[in-house]
Image (cartoon, rainbow, N blue to C red; front, side, top):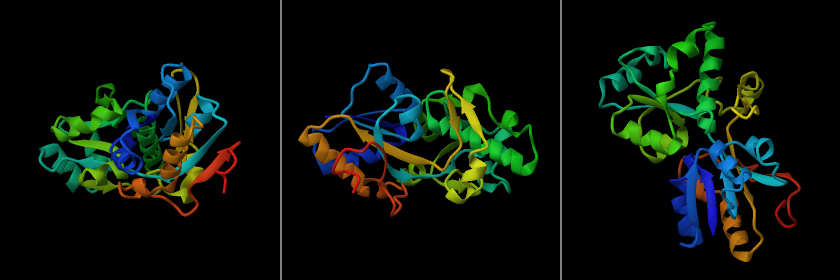
Length: 262
């Protein structure tokens, strides 16, 4: 059974495999890239799980999906590097990020929601501080890595800090700085402010700021896929890896098949 997932779900999927059996084959990419692989007919997964529910509508016109978890942004740092220690000790989380002696890693916003959410967080911080130059001072093109490679760069000390999801930091035991709720994209109370930022993808579609959520859909109706998807919806495999599974999850959207909405 083929499962295509967001890169930030890759480690958690090991728990899902243990719960469903070794027949579950998992492939992980940045969610924008994963959605395009499906849209272009290059992948045909039984289950698709992405880090931004809007991708199901913007890129895939998926008839239904289930929102299963939430997350938030944090700033992970390497305490073994001088630049990482500057990040840990700074009064403001953004202050060290524009320094020449501090290297920041981030994912490519054209391939991955974590990449454009990093930009959103900095834009929201810039507005709060009335500092229009903040984004340009912090970000440069050579910081960008595929989501599945970013953590390898971080772990080898190639970068001092990285903007990651809280779940990524927790499941790998990285030290991190929490970001203010007004910029971490994890607090529904700030949804209106989040919605004021956006990023245009190369194909012309627009990603808009919103509280971070993960969603999945089932693309096959055989019994094996149905059983695996029910396990996915239960959410325990996500809680154990630092994701937040609210009581209202799974939240079904669209023309949901009989038997799933309840």
